[in-house]
Length: 266
Image (cartoon, rainbow, N blue to C red; front, side, top):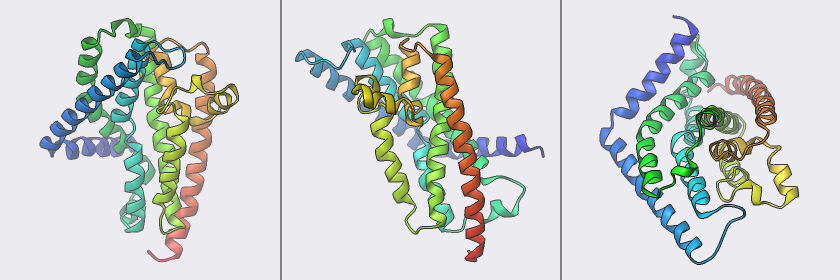
């Protein structure tokens, strides 16, 4: 079996596992559609009272936070993947992967892609209904913007995988590796634009945040959707450098962790 086919099996396994629990899938979709609706009513109330957020109009801010919810529900599964890796290292369930000609890190990436595929199919109809229900069609992107949005959405998924898998590897050295994941969650939620858009930060903080990889988790894909990006090549270069750097660090730490794992006889 070729290397590609090995990970294609892991991808299909993630799909079938998720679909085995059809009731959970339906409740997942309904629950998040309700939460999205609640978010919309919050911002309608804020702007009705005369408040604004930076340069964003009401339609713009609704679009922004609907897309935040969309990304959280589709490609942000790397967070739960990180906790899964912590438990599998602690319980020794990574041993079969070490004994077979298959990479555990790549298997987890394929698993994340499978979950994202299911989430995307469940959430997209809900998002489309909300956008048309609120007459936000003026913020629908052009074909080019949509292509760049989905491209950077995939890049976002890769960053979620790299950041949270790398955080989970702390479990090789400490008992509560999950604490590192919680730390990344706190930093990420502040610097990925999910609380407030990064472009309303003070200039010095905005400059710092746009040089870090966290912007690619949420803020950057949304900016492509909304047509607010003026430097796509620069962003692509920064993203590529961070992906290469984090991939190298992940590979290095994984090899060190495996040596530690074997040394303690687990």
